[in-house]
Image 1 (cartoon, helix red, strand yellow):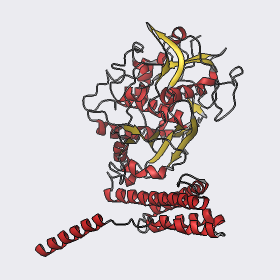
Image 2 (image 1 turned 180 degrees about the vertical axis):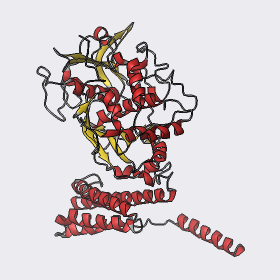
Image 3 (image 1 turned 90 degrees about the vertical axis):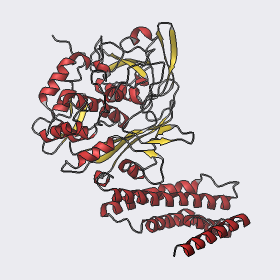
Image 4 (image 1 turned 135 degrees about the horizontal axis):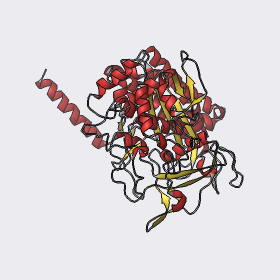
Length: 524
């Protein structure tokens, strides 16, 4: 009887949602081979855990690049159009690739388990337990964020779900204490954070998985060598934990090999469930962080960092940073994927949407909230298609955010005056105002964007803020003290009181006016 070891190529490990015109045979979940063979019939992957879907996308992008030949820069754009015109991924290419690495996609293979390190069974003192593996369960003395669990009696975890949490750990694992791992003379029990920890990941999404995966590919840089740019399952030897040289050598290894955590799943009595897991550090050095699906910002110290996942921040506030290279009022670098996705969007019958995935979390143990959001079709607004309209989208976002900032300042100042606080800071009024304003502003933004109606946006957002301000501060309006505080801070909705001009400032203004008059006289 052939050994299975939970073969991810054949097992129904990936839940999917089928397109309306899909053919016969629509299982709720498929293996990786069928996922790619029928990608043109699949509307979307139905993974419920946003960070797991974000991680799985990156694995699928790498597989897509390999089976289509889009892993090399020569003739890349033309090759991608050829694949798109074919309407599906080539079955012969899929079969040839998976035949070559058929033993590398087994979740419990004793020699090369998928995206795992079999050496951990000997190099680690003890396993971490199933609860530690599941990112939504508490383990040890950690707080219970999403559910209650007891280490002595862990809930059942089937192998398909175990795959998802394996992916979450590889991409979103925390920094700090982990299982002790001994490699030669090195014995350590700490790790650095995963490559996507705290970040929000943005993905172009089409009408089918086939379109989504093609849109998610980034053109390789000139000089990229597919023979050197290897995914973890393609390497003949396991990597040296004490040396990161050549671990990342191009876009595909960048997508799949940046993990700072090493894991090994232990099967239960059958291969249908995970019984235990080893979780520890993968490398002592930190692999440089880079990713084509993140918005990169610059700190005051000049260091790049990825925009954080924030469950309270709606996706429309990031839209212009996805459509433009230089969004107004931001020091942000657009995700590289949207440059080539916008070019592909011209060739599709339907415009591409944007999906944002991640976890609001700290660098170490605390996970606060899963984050998942998507836009309507928007890539027709990218600067490659219409730079002027992209700029107007940016101006619309700036108007909405500016009014939101003013509303926050007004409610804080009103509360401080009403409660006799020492300084204006976050308070019940500002929190309630934010909860009321941002959803209303989001609805206004999308409606104006759908109607391509950009004029008068600032006034519309301000009317929303005025209404919210009155609602939030209404309880204090019946007293003299409250009415005074309320009306005194209202001016912040309109930009605040004008600053007093000093004598020096007046002199500078007079000098500027004199120079302007002189220039006008000389150049009538």
